[in-house]
Structure formats: structure tokens, C-alpha cells
Image (cartoon, rainbow, N blue to C red; front, side):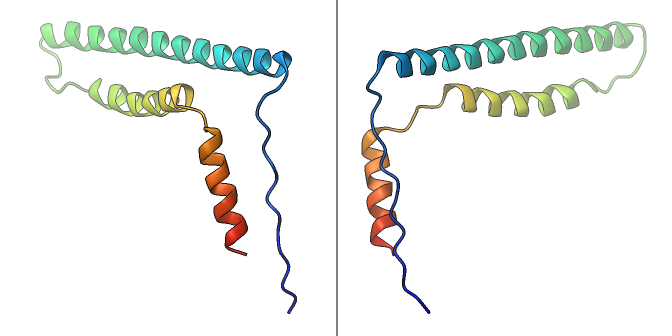
Length: 105
């Protein structure tokens, strides 16, 4: 059995303004997508609750069935928010991980 060492790739900080601009554009696009998702969530769930309220007032079902799509979709929305707004990796975190991986060979 051969003992081979795997060298971790080096990570360079952004040096050019074009890289930063591209990153900024991607982040802004992701935030815009999340805001659209949030608006659709609020509008659709408001409509579902309004329908339930009208049916309930007319003597219809007492059980608040819109809770299921609201909670289910809300969980997905929370994951989308965490993906969109989570902090990026710092250089220190990257260096620590590279050191950990190179030391475990």
C-alpha cells in the first residue's frame, strides 16, 4: 500500500476588482431571488388564510388547514434565507481547514 499525501489547494484572496464585482453581482442576485420568494410566500399564504377565514365565517371547516402549507413552505423559506444571508468563509477559517487537512494525511 502506498502512502500518498494530498496537498490542499491554496486559496488566494480576491485581488482584482472584477472578481469582487462578480461576487457582488451574484450576492445581489441571490438576495433579489430571496425577496421575490418571500413576497410570493406572503401573498399566497395570505390568500390561503383569507379563503379559510371566509369559509370558517360561513360555517365551514373549523380546523385551520392553511397552517400546513404555511409551516412547510416557511421551513423552505428559512433554509433559503440562511443560504442567501449566511456569512462567507473568512481567510482564517480557510487557513485552519487547510492546516487541519494537510496535518491529517
